[in-house]
Length: 100
Image (tube, rainbow, N blue to C red):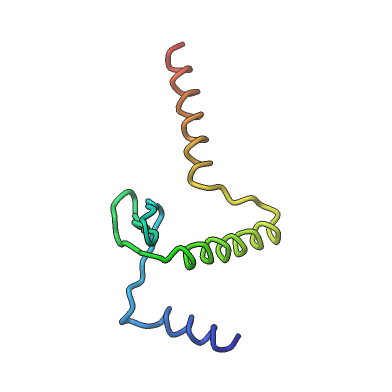
């Protein structure tokens, strides 16, 4: 565990490594790997190619982190798809009210 913490500490504090923040992504399936286009407010900021094996492992690891957070907090984290549905419903209600 100490080795992982050391790697994380070096990565987070290294001025030589890019530090990105993404609030969106597009995922693409290739014939040999996957591609993620990371976005910030709808603007592409980076691409990330992952082998299928690494992509699946990443999905499982991130899912585990989120599941643990949800269990500990008693809250369900909404996905961007959840948010899109909520915002679309709000817009429909708003449109219906303005027509009355």
